[in-house]
Length: 436
Picture (cartoon, rainbow, N blue to C red):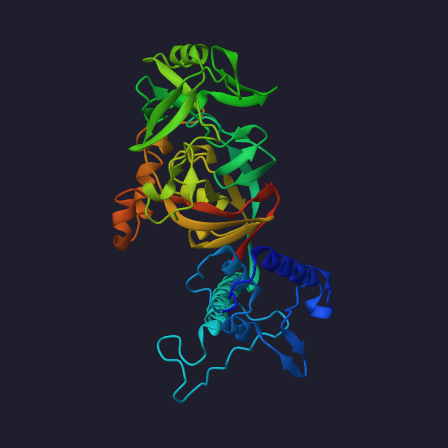
């Protein structure tokens, strides 16, 4: 019988020859550089495919294994598709019928799931953008609607006052910057300094009436204090960081202030002839008090340093004249310590001003000013009377019974305003009432 397996050397020679033929074929197009199958015939037909060669036993790899005495590997009997044969296109899945896909992916197939998710996110983003745009248009329309349809002139600014140290003498200024926390002229800000006890509780002219005799100015970056019988004392507006920050107490609310030093503390204590007092300064980095915590009718955005509750107090000249017609001894506007003194309107007309415009500054009326015994301190002598003009005011300026929970039994004189739009005002500016 003829030997089934050829000699090992001849098998290797045959395999090497076939490999040389493969390496020598360059091909063209998509087959460039690929190794053609030696059993592949022409495109018109003929020849044997690798599958048929494998089954016939004449595949070179099988011949090599036979020559080397190896057993065919399991699962390797069917070679890959020839590179010369184009890949079969995937069979389309019908949208319906027996071959249609089922399940949560539906007939569209998994390929459509990602685009669908993209459309969902795009739609959500478009809706969010539309909502933001709608809110912006609504807010803009609301602002336009809130603008006054017309301005009605109701008076003229006759005087401006800044009170740097609470309860000390005010400074009349020709012009002032209106900030959210009150009036400012240069480095003097309204009620940004406060006299306190050693334990931090505030001291005002209610307890020390002679405080109204202390004059305040500002020179070369220093707060200048002067009083009858006392040498002028200067305190730096910008205090050293080594000065301690003290916790203070005003009308039951806590607030901080940086101590101005021992020298000014001795100066105040000597002039008032009292227990040891300190002077503190409110710095812009500190947390202000909320006006709403004092009177609930204020907004949450209204804030102050050491004023009682409001950034701005306005009184009309006609209101003061009306009061003086009822008094035996006339009083001055300094008894009531307003920031803006207005002329050219009727008595107590300021009580009806809800929104006003002075220069470029817009302000909103909040509540009337409830008066106390501080109005009875004579601003020229520093003597506390405790009666007038408070008693006369009580005779005709008490609040409506429905507002008793706000003002209690205190008479009303002047009106508090919050700042809606900051800017600069000056003496002679017209005062407009903003009419809707």
